[in-house]
Length: 223
Length: 223
DNA sequence: TGTTGTGAAGGCGTTCACAGCC
DNA sequence: GGCTGTGAACGCCTTCACAACA
Image (cartoon, rainbow over all chains, first blue to last red; front, side):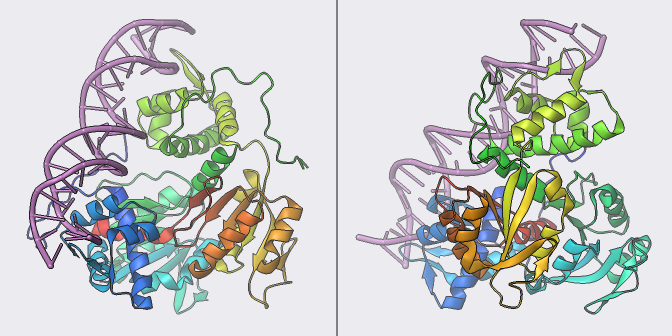
């Protein structure tokens, strides 16, 4: 009963040809893949790309590429394809990557350490502005230019710093309580690395990165 | 330790009603979730559970729970529900978690370090038996009880140690080449943490853990 | 000619609803 | 009465196929 399908966020004055119907999760995830391909191609100086080429590089089909993009507008030229740089910028806008997101990281263990040093993170506009942990030994120590705070102060600090996204890199046993603290702190989205199903109010967006599931599905397929 | 070669555990008497049609990926992923819930409940000493309760804890619907399980047999008792311990063991078998998997980790950076220290990994039967890196500075150093090898020796070492699963925790730019080395080394499954689409032969199973996609889909939903 | 954008068809997974059993 | 197991209905996503257009 908890995490049921979400309400569509109605678009009042929205962008010109944007967001007609509801966008499927698969479409968004593929856009993310196209975006990465296009970023690389702009670096290589490529000018235009067809749906066939983009599909080949992104592991999709040409029809799917065109369908995905058509949800948001008409970015291509018939007979030619898409302009690499323009399309990249369009998708960046669609994904909401042309702005900064203030992120709080909870859990200063091995995974938290890896995340806090992950350069790509900040490059895409996700800026870690607070780190929390439960352990007395870690609270007060400095990672990069941030001092690790007590998880007890999560609500206060997140509100003060205007945190919008929370990342949970703590043990599963603590994850639900952390999520609830984040919700109370006004966080709008949560990225959960703990291998446990979390329950949050409908207006809070939740995404999971669950290595255990992937490993187990790998194991299943190999059996 | 079970140093059993790549012999498929042939089912002599075989389970009665197993694996009829093809199992969807979503089903396997949900099974993985049920499994984690059941593991915890056995710890709590719970005896039986209904599809309604399991659905509530696992973020699914009762009908889905029953459908998922029915792909593999009839594990419940009408009027009562499922025996927690029995169901857990059944799912463990289905997912292939009642055996050891020999794993090679490539990339001894922050993420690789976090993975190599992740206890849950080994607990589910995934044993890291080799670690590789490209950097001269890291090759030869010791992590836990494993010495980091040169990625140049990947094929040789993986074959010698009978590695079945490869984990890629290296930069995206190196990921495709590493995947190809793994394929040449006879690895049967690959878990890829690099944010790039990999291309491998059909007989090699590939799963991805892509934090970038999750973050970007989060960003999209919040926009 | 080459490629996009899109309605229509098809395939697949989820949900429903109820028969079958405890 | 309660709950499972499952065929059938439903709805969504993918694929097809072609008109529109540079």
